[in-house]
Structures are given as structure tokens and as C-alpha cells.
Image (tube, rainbow, N blue to C red):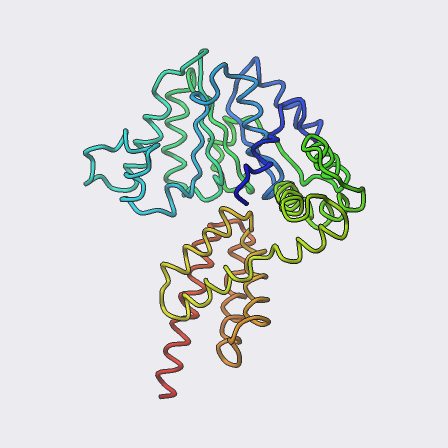
Length: 344
């Protein structure tokens, strides 16, 4: 979609967050800022809630809210980190610095500069379950050193992955998956603000299909309206049947089959980071597409299923999904190639 995303143009204010318990907890931190762990499943509105809090708290949220996705560090090369415009000012002239030292420096420097307004700024670390324990220890020291001028908000699907010294320094803000009725209320507010024709069956269909992923529901509703200029049961069904990412998943499989693991990894990362898949959801879709829409069959398909079983537990525990899924595709590609060579 070329139009601005509704997740941005209709970002909620703090008072508009759909879950009363989340509003109450965040309200308590407006006048008494503290470090937070915002925890919940993918797509439930963790980032939207943090941004709403920042707009309520800071006079200049554009400058005093610093958002860092953990994947910006841990899934990128040193060159990519150095060339990121958000980080290059901290890393200029430090080409020989180890990746670990680069990450520590960015965190320290981001935490140390003075806020543009008020007495503190907010640094958000998203997808924090992927931070290794040694980096968490470094983060703990930064949090201790700059606690007077920097509020840290750690957004994660799995707070149990955080070390106890970090959890003990943070106020927990759990965000559950919204109910279908809560999702419908959010969608109804958006389509009315957009002056879009809709019916209740269309809203319910989109909300139910999203399965508690609020971001997915809002973007599905927008895609339906962009294509049909209305949101009804029929138009939503037609659009959402075309919204899958089978072609992108096929690209990942084809790249792996050709031995281009870098391209396969990029395809996986794009779907997880941009489209909101979690690891197990992506694995299920990968197997479905491989079985139903690719030329993969016989021993190759059996190997893919066997390898999928070996990474399923890792994905369930919340470790880095992109790494495990890329390893799966790499191992599958290698085994397929070796099998072909033995047959020849």
C-alpha cells in the first residue's frame, strides 16, 4: 500500500488504548517516570502503547523518544550498523571496533545525551527477547549509570528471557491479545474517522481472522478499503484471500534451494520484521507453502519436515526466530545438495 498506514495515522493516544489495565499502568508512569517492561504477544500494540506514553510524557517526543529494534543490532553486519543514520554519529571513525563494543557504545551514547525537553528521555528496546545475556549485563550497567536522565522501556514477547537484574529494575506492563470485540471497537473507530462504508459483519470477519493481532487487523482493514472502497464481509473475504505472503515464502525456499542463504535470510527477516509473523507461525506457513505451492516433494520435502521439527522447540522458547529459520533453510539446502550429489 502506498498510502500512509492506518497503524501510523490512527495511532492511539494514551487514553484511547483499548485495554483499561494497560491505560491504568501507563498512567501511573506519566508523572513518575520509571523503567518499564512492556510484554505481550506479537501485534497486540506494545509499540503503539509506548509511543502513546511518550506523546503524553514528553513535550518533544520526536526527539526524546529513541526507538531501537534489537534486530537493528543483532541481525546486521558491522558495516550495516555503522551506516545506519541513527548510529553513525556514535561510530564515526571506529571501523575497527568489535560488534559488541559498537552496540555498547550506541547504547551508552544514546543514554548519555541530554533530553531536548523536560528532565529525561525514553529509549525503547523492541524485541528484547533476542538480546544475549552478556549484552543484557552491559545494558544493566547503562541503566544504572543514566537512571536520572533516561527511561528505558523494554518491549518483549518473553520477559523470562531478561536477566533478573533488569526485570527487577523495571515496572511490568503486560498487554494481552485483544478480544474480538476490542479489535472491532478499534476498527470501527478507524473506519468512521476515514468516512468509509462498512458493516458489522465485515468488521467482525477482519477482527476474527486476525486472531488477537491488532496490527494485522488494522492493516487488513486498510487493504480491503484500498481495494474496494468499503469494508464488508464480502470485500474483506475477497481481499484477505489475496493478502497472503506465499510468493515471498516461495522466494525464501527458492533462494535456499539455490544455495543463496543470504537472500533466504533476507526474505525470512522481512516477513518476520515487517509482516508480524512470529517464528512458529512462519514455520507453519513455510511447510504449508512447500507442500502445496512448490515443486518440493519426496525426500526433499521429508527432510524439510524433519528439520522443522528440530527447530520448533527453539522457536517456542522465544529465541531469535530469524536465526533458527535461516539455519533450517541452510541445513535443508545442504542436505538436498549432498543427496543430489550422491545420486549422481
